[in-house]
Amino acid sequence: MNTRHLLYLVLLLAAGASSLTNCANAPETNAPASTPRSTSTRPRQTDVPPERLYTPTTPRQPTLFVPAAITGTLRVALAEAAKQLALNPAENKNSADVAVAVQRGPDAQVLTEHLYAAADWFPTQRVNIGSEDLLNLWQGQATPDGVTTLYLSPGTLAVFTDLWGKPAANVQAVPAAKLVETLWTNHAALALVPFEQLVPKIKALRVDDLDLLDRNATLEAYPLVVRTFISGDPNYIEGITSALAKKALLTNRDTERMTKLIMTGVTAISRTSAFKIDAAGDPALPARKVAAVLAAADLTMVSNETPFTKICKPELGTLRLCGKPEYIEALNLAGVDLISSTGNHMNDYGIDAFRETLDLFDANGYRVYGGGRNIDQASRVLVVQDHGNKLAFLGMNSFGPKGVWATADRPGAQQYDVDKLHQELAEARQNADVVFLDLQADETYQYEPIQANKDKFRDGIANGADVVMGVQAHQPQAIEFTPDGKRMILYGLGNLFFDQMQSDNVRQGLVVRHTIYNGKLIQTELLPTLLENYVQPRWATPPEAQEILDLVFGASHFK
Image (cartoon, helix red, strand yellow):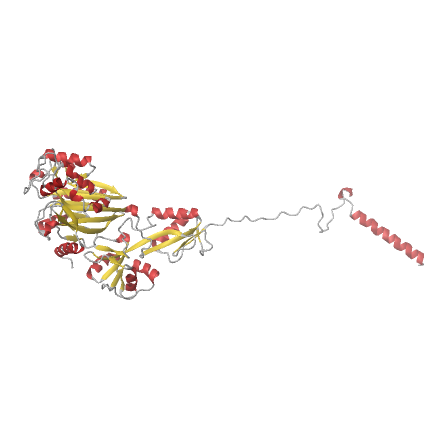
């Protein structure tokens, strides 16, 4: 083949290749209907990308972190609150929406606060202990005043071991039910007790001069306290706080559930007292030196034995007693709320004078029990509510005379009847948290009560009373506790407002201050008084007070 023929063949092949390329790139609409689609895998510009498959994301669940150090009832309550709020457990504090801690952190607030008392046996002369001495005792060192042993229930021991570290051998665990009894067997010991578990038979000491029984005490620096803290989302914090509040777990010392009740001995503003009042021109004279303490209580009770009547003409050296209506200003100054009217002199000036007295009590807002305008009123169980506590009061007179006992149409005191007493105590027990029974029993001038009075008073305790108090005694008398320490008998408090000055025993008196918390009597304090000038009690000095208490405790056979 010559060169010209070869060039011609190359041009012919190039033309054929160009024609094939144009056919392949022609639009599909130009192809015959029978022409198959291209099977090329190369994507075309007009292809639609296949749909992507999306998996829905689950919203993240909010979480709560509770450290292992929180156990028991609180941990269970937190778990229940978390369930209600749809909070899952968190693995650590940093990842949680809301976190509980046993140490305060940035932006944390107090969630729960539980306070503990340092307690001694009831007759102790000790009133305060320093927190440093308590910590040294925990580590095995006796206190400067001779305390060598510390008792705690197993639960409290675990709490303070977390707080203070491992204790020395002189720190002993005692079952909670045995703690009071054990403390009484060792006068060189103290106990640490949750505030709400206090009972009258043991005495809560001040710690660093801070008083748990004082509603107005500033306790930020109180050392025997265990707190938990919470931080995070405010909405969840509010929900958790609300849930714990419903279970009363935020604190074991809620001052809105604390009632202070003062009860006193004989009031009979008459005879020499009346002359002293008139000479001073001060109808409130008897109460001037003790009124501040009496009036500070939520409820203050006196046992009034004599009528306040316009026909009263005071006499000296008589057993026919009365007071002028204006003398009631002493009761008003003392902040009196409750009057036990079981006294045996209420009808000394006749039944109209007693009715006049009851009218005066009504006008001053006093609530009366143990006596009244007729037997129905006299036998009424008085239930009083204060700071969420229901307190029942009832009283009877076994001493007489017959003329002072109320009847269907005659005012007076309720006569003692054991069967009726049991019925009233059952009613009181059903309708109240704490039951107080006053008995106007046989009068004796001695510190130790007679057996007849012991039998009556113990029967009252056995049938439902929490406190039985003798309002007949013109001098202080013995005290008894039930073995568990929760209930007590005060056989006599002596005189409050009266004129007896013939001997020390009748000049001496006891003001009793009860603390009721969350429906339970948890403490009873004895505040000794001494009568001056036939008319006016004053607070006993420390040596005088200890002398009075020693006589009372001796008659009580406390060991």
